[in-house]
Each structure stands twice: as structure tokens, then as C-alpha cells.
Image (cartoon, rainbow, N blue to C red):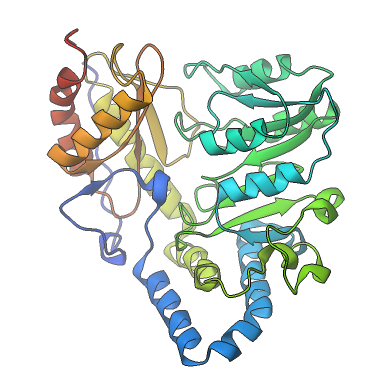
Length: 389
């Protein structure tokens, strides 16, 4: 059996920055994120301003949102005039796809690693060509080759993950986007995991790119951004009609009347905090933790690590055949681990054996992964359908 690597040291002060219950090992940051206390405090202060003088607050909202957007754009390396706040990646996907003119016969290329609701949004607009990507494809070049091979004269749009959610690897690389553009394909990139995790989160020169801020960017839930290339901005329609429609993108897209804007306004505090902590140090720590957890789980008989993209704070492994092969079976295993073990992980379904994804964050500790690795065989034995592992 391969020796496990040395455990990474705890990130100084990391645990104290969050209000997470210590009774649970939160190894699934990638799904819902967690909001640090300074960001919570910033949002609370904004809510107090709102409740103190609602008129003043809401009349100032368009300018306040524009200021927050400019701060976010600075962190992401984006054009603030080409960036809009949205609620989440699913909403962004629908805004982007609705801005594209589809003709009869046009198709949308997706992969089977795509996020379900995002792919569903695409399916409502045009027929899909689904590329089946083996989770064990060895490297980025193999992924790129398989996707390009599926492009036909009917391919109008390629809707691709920047970082795939289940398998935790980069798909929409700058080289792939450039080659798709050369073929006349409009590119829409789901960068849900990119802000905060990647030093350069925008994926090459995509026509549309969107990313959640509430995952690795430490923002409140309901905070995401949509980046649009200049040629497409005039076609992005506001999700609701408002008094800001005449401003066009991005302001018309952002204004939602008397909704709660405090999450968006507090969102820059999350990336500011990441910068104060030293973003490079945080990313290196989180990646090392995910690698450590993956190495421990890979020592369990029947579990094998999947190829990964370096520097990411998530790692995925394949489970033995017969385990988590359906959504229902994956959910049952996930909830069993949470209820009996007090550990949160992502279990994703896949024919021939599902997968388990672990994340690393500054509030995590090496012993949380060690405890999961020690006890996971017992859970697999209960969910293998009597096959034995």
C-alpha cells in the first residue's frame, strides 16, 4: 500500500473565520461554500442601512451595485462594463443562452459532466450533442481532442464547464476555446468553481462566461457574475422589466426592484478577504488538503483516484462497481455518511461505480480526512448491494 503524504499544517486562524458547527466535517465546500464572519458582518451592516432608511438605500442601489461590480471585476481581471451580477450560475446560463440567435438545425454541444440545470436550460433552446467524457481521460489534451471531434457544421454553441463539478478537472481551457472559435462555435463557459479558486478565473476568450462568487469567493449565497463579450452584450435581456432597462447591459440585468441586494454588495468583501489572507497561500493550502484527502481515500481497496488538474481545491475518486451508480443510490450514500459520520462530501452517480469528491478549505483539518478514510469502507460495504468490496 502506498504511503500517505505528510498532512498539511492547519491554516492559521482559518477555523475562527467561520461559524461552521465543529460537530460536522465540512469537506464539501464546492457545493455551497461558506461565508466568513467578516463578510457576514458586512452584509448585516448593509441590512441595517436598508432597514434604517429604505428610501435612501433603494434609490442608491444602482450606483452601489455598480461600485461593487467594479470591485469584483478588479479581482477577476474582467471588464466591469461587460460583467453583471446575477443570482447563480443557472440563471447566468439561461441569460447567456437566451441571447444567442438559434436557427433551425442548430445544435448545442455539451458534455455529460455538465451541471444538470445548466444542461436543461440548453435543451429547451436547441437539440443537444452530448460528448461522453470518460472520467479517467488522462489529461487536458485528451479532453480537448474528444470535444473537438464532436463538432459538426450544425454546432452553434459549445456549453462547457470551466471546472467540472463531479470530476474536478478543467475542461474549458483557453486552447479549447480558441479552437472552437476558429470553427465558428459560440462558447458558453460554466465557471461556477473558478472565482476564488483560480488565480485567473476567466477562461480564455469565451463569448459568455459565468461563475459563482459564493463558493470559493467567500461571498453570500445568491452571488454570481456573468461576463459577456462586447459583440453579445446588447442581446442579453433583463430577466425582469424595470426602470433601469434603458441603461442596457449590465445595469438592466442587475436591477430587480425591491429585492435583497445586500449579498451582491457584500460580495467584494469576500474576495478582499481572500487577498488579505494571501490568495496564493490559500489556494496552495486548499489544494494540498484536497490532495492529502484524496491520497488517503485512494488507499482504500476498490477506490481509485481520477486524473486531476493541478492546483484545484477539489479531488474526485471512483467508487467500486455497484456503488452510487444512480442518483438515488448516490444520495443515499451521501446522507448515510452525513448522518452516521458527521461528514459532508459529494457523492456523484456514474455507471460502473459512482464517485466521491472531497474539497479543501482553510477551515478544514487533516484529521477530518483521516477519519473519513478510516471509516469509509464500512459505509461502502453497506451500499454495495451485497457484492462485497
